[in-house]
Length: 277
Image 1 (cartoon, helix red, strand yellow):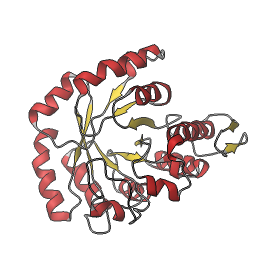
Image 2: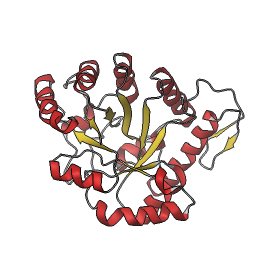
Image 3: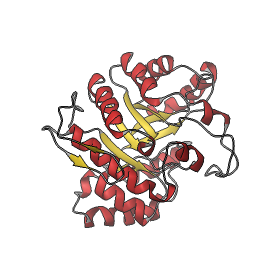
C-alpha cells in the first residue's frame, strides 16, 4: 500500500519545500494539503469534530502555491488537495491552476474535492449552502470541458458558462485523478459514481459497512468495479488499521501529520517510516 501524508501547512509550520524533500527522501508516496481561504471569527458553524476550528484552520497556506513549491523540489512525490473547495473558486481560473500544476509536475496531481463544512466561509464566497453539492458538480463539469482535447463549450446552471475555447496546458492524463471527500451516504456515493474516481473517507472509519454500499452505487452507474479507488484520509495509523485497509482493497492511505514546526514533524515522519517500509 502507498503511504502518503497530509498536514495543515501554515506560516508557523515546517515549510513546504523542506517537508516535500524529507517526504521523498523517506519514501513516502505523496503530500496532500487542505484548503481554507479564511475562517470568520463570528461563528454559527461548529467544526465537524465539535467546538471551534483549531488555530491552523485560519492560517492555512494556499494549497496550489504550496504544492507548486513541493513539485519544484521533488521528482516522484505525488501531490494532492485534501480537500479543495470548488464552490469557493471561479471554475475557469481553477481549471487553469489545476492543469498547470499537473502539467508542471509531470502528472502527479490528485484533486481531492469536497463540499466544505464552514457555512460562514462559504457565504463570504457567495455560496448558497443548500445547493453547494450541485454547485460543485457544475463547476467540475465546466473544468472538464476546459480540459477536453478539443474546444468544448459548457453552459452551467449557477451563473458560470464557458465558450468553446483553447485552454492549455491540459492535465497530463486528460484530467487529474478526482477523489470526493465526505461522510458516507447515498448522496455522496451517487456523486462519486457520477463525477469522481473514488472516495477519501476522513479518518477511515466504518469502511467495512460503507464500501459495499458505495460499490453497489458505482456498479449501478456502469462503472468498472476495478477502477474504484478508496483512499482513507487523515488517518492516525496503527499496523492493524493499515492491514484492515489493505484487506478492503485500499491501495493508498494518507496519514495525518501535526501542524507543527520542523523538529516535531520530522519526529513523526520518522515514526511513520516503519509503515512505509
